[in-house]
Picture 1 (cartoon, helix red, strand yellow):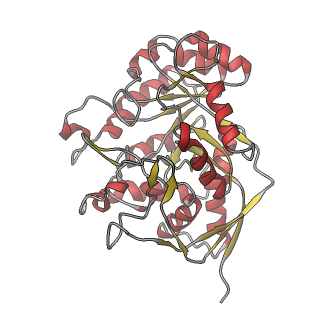
Picture 2 (cartoon, one colour; picture 1 turned 135 degrees about the vertical axis):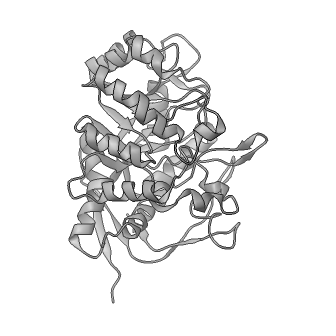
Picture 3 (cartoon, rainbow, N blue to C red; picture 1 turned 90 degrees about the horizontal axis):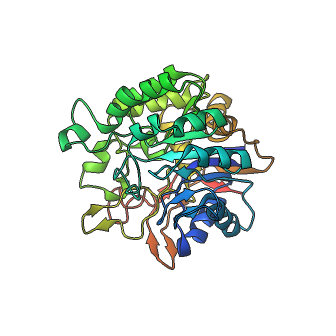
Length: 374
């Protein structure tokens, strides 16, 4: 029996981290190797990407400069690069308006203060509700990318049996955001909970969500059994019912709101003096992991219906939301085992999923069921 082959247009990873300096080139190369036509490159660098133009005041990196660095690292092999502006206490409506008029500013990123890697520069959500920044984004068609977790919670409130930080955010803050700014286009980034999925599906046009491979494949039990720290990311992987809701949403024949955003987040030193750095690295292998996730969710990728669902999620929905063209170039997914190996960089080795979290750790599961060819 011949291997199943799925040919798809090159896709957009609409939530990825590429860091900076010596890590930038190898991380971009890993994305090119998995058939990316473009990316949304998150701005939580050090210093953050918190101004639009080089000439703007402050020591922060500009959207202009970071975007140019990414294009250079890709040797112009990426068709589209969107760099969101990191929302800080220094962000003003004027910055949004001027950036949007230039055509350079297409998205902004909200981080919960001290809620994840590089979020110490963030400002409280309520500040933007009242200072004109969200209003300027709505008026100028700038997408709001949201890390939707409540911050400053006690341990039992952050992740408890009946409640968690993401559910609180989508229960309390997102309904008020939609009521106050009904025309603001919003991406619920790396969604993890059934409550969040239900909110997005009910919100309708103008609200979408990115979904990672790990949140479609794993649950918190996979993380906690012997603490598989390479699976530690924020928001945390959740429970069976949450994963089931995500799987149902991405397989829905009418799905137009849920799309691929890997949140691929590399760390050369995952364990730190104060705990564990948040982020799963899936650069180079994300389409293979998404194919595995879709099959685990019940999609038959030997049939056109299953392939169509994967294509909507991986290729079409995100491009449609951001107004990006579907690529004329293609890549192939082949049902043929492939090995997973660490990514070597001058800054150190980066361990991708699913290495380090399967049987026989630290090596873990070093093989995927799908291969990718360009």
